[in-house]
Every structure is written in structure tokens, then in C-alpha cells.
Length: 116
Picture 1 (cartoon, one colour):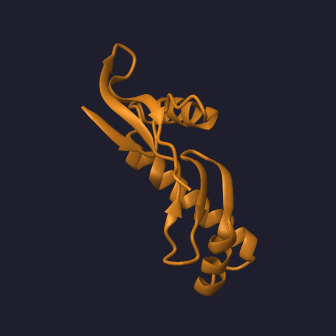
Picture 2 (tube, helix red, strand yellow):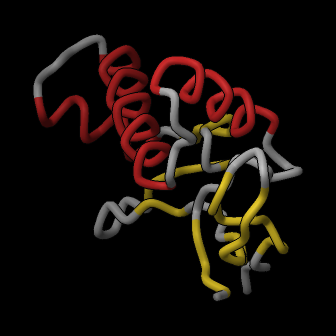
């Protein structure tokens, strides 16, 4: 099965992805799925925005998120569009694969190129 995804731990363009996977596996005795990476990234973004805003007030955090350009997230470069607050993040083509190490996992195939 081939799909589009925002995270795979064997992403060649993102060394943090594999480190996160290895740390997660050591702590949880299981390999992370993309939902774990997105949850971690969400909390990381919230912390970065609160730090940038020097506040936990909603309006200040939203304003900081709108300006945030997180170049080193687990998902790759991530920023929010001011209009609609939609996150822009790289997409990857992955295939459901099996390996002795990971069992079943989303194997990296290629990055989806963004049309400008």
C-alpha cells in the first residue's frame, strides 16, 4: 500500500526523525507511528510559541504560532499560514513494508514536491 504521510523515521532529509524513533523505541518498547510524531511535534510547537510569546495567553500564543518557522521539526520545516492557521509541512510518499527490525512500518519512498 502506498500513501502520503508527514512522518517516517527513515526520512533521509531529517536526522531528528530517526533519533526520535530510536528514543521512542527505547522508552516504549515499540516503534512510533506517525500519530506519535505529530503529537510530539504539536507539543513542541506549543512550547516554542509560548516561549516566543513569553506568555500562555491564547491570543499571544496564536500570534507567535503565526510567525513561527520551525525548520527542524520531526516532520521537517513547518510553519502556519496566517489565513486559516493551516500548517504547511512536507509530505512524503511511503509504502507499508515489513522488516525484521521495524516489523510493519511506513517505508520512505520519496518527498512530494510542492507546487508554487
